Amino acid sequence: MLLRIDPTRDEPVYAQLAASIRADIAAGRVGAGERLPSAKDVARALTVNLHTVLHAYQVLRDEGLISMRPGRGAVVAERGAAVAALLPQIARLAARADELGIDRDTLASLVRDASADDRDASTDDTERGEGT
Image (cartoon, rainbow, N blue to C red; front, side, top):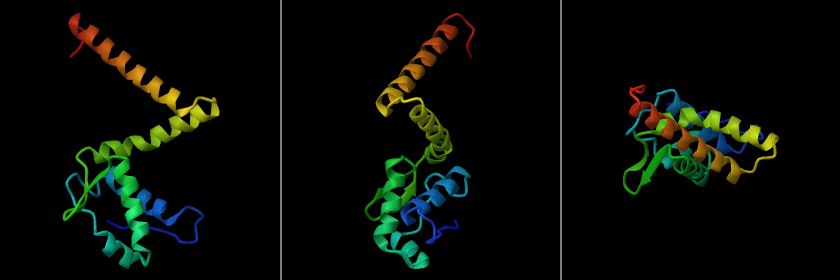
């Protein structure tokens, strides 16, 4: 895994680091169950503050991409790659909702409703013998 940051960019270093790891997970360069380098090792290698790396890891944990356990460090979650692959689409959806003046709570409700509608339609198709 090659971690990339550019301290001259306006984007915070922790966000750049999280984006780099997120991209590696989405591309399959780091698989489910694999340990990420220790925060201390990353901080040393990139010459950044340890708390910057921990912040990046916490962002990834909050997104469901990694789990963090005392003594085990940061480990890629089972569904980490799937979640990472969806994040760009979710970001585009959220941006479009913002353009249309739809707040995040309403958007989340719409997504839940659409998901429930899809499950209901799939169940109906299966009951009629049309589904898989």
